[in-house]
Image 1: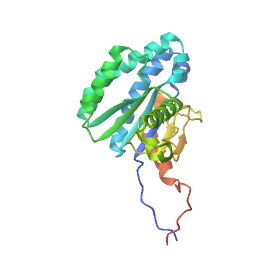
Image 2: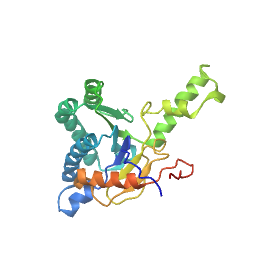
Image 3: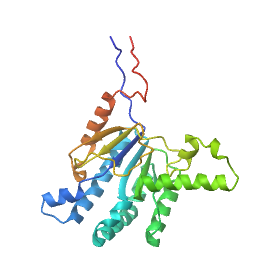
Image 4: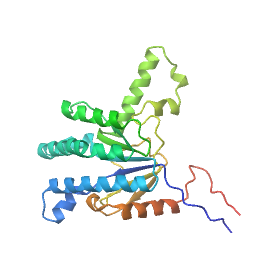
Length: 243
């Protein structure tokens, strides 16, 4: 008979926060109302992740593909991020949250860049929870930039191409030094990764829920974690039978 395996909380949980617009439309509200409600869901999820002892929480806030949305909505999302940092960074700092923003800062307003740097600098020494916000982020672009950085080192004679390992590549990513994703959650019913943390999610467990992001809460997170605990993670190996 197999021995009971104790629950092991994932070190790194990543969330694709999807469904804000559909949540709003279902209520006859403008899409902006869904994005505002999504910020409340983010606040709840950060607290819940911290309470669950999760080490890293990554959230997909704005993708490089989101620039294709109407300009008014894009500017609203930028303003929402700016307001979130202004209003919440002090509370997050007091709660021991370390904020890290990943993604390209090209084309971002100088005021937003200033706010991002402030949040990272203020919370840099916190250890309770690392909150990674992927903003203006695309995994393909991240991988291309990592390859470019290594190619430049080779061209400069600082390393040999034959010596490049997966560790070198991983350390060239935006998430250098951060553990790989254990659990990827996507809300809103869609079942795809949408160019999010492709390298980091190589062995992640995927969890898809029909819940729209504004309705996601500690109960929904607990359900996802329970599903994760029931998975058999083998990382390409065989299941080990215990007496």
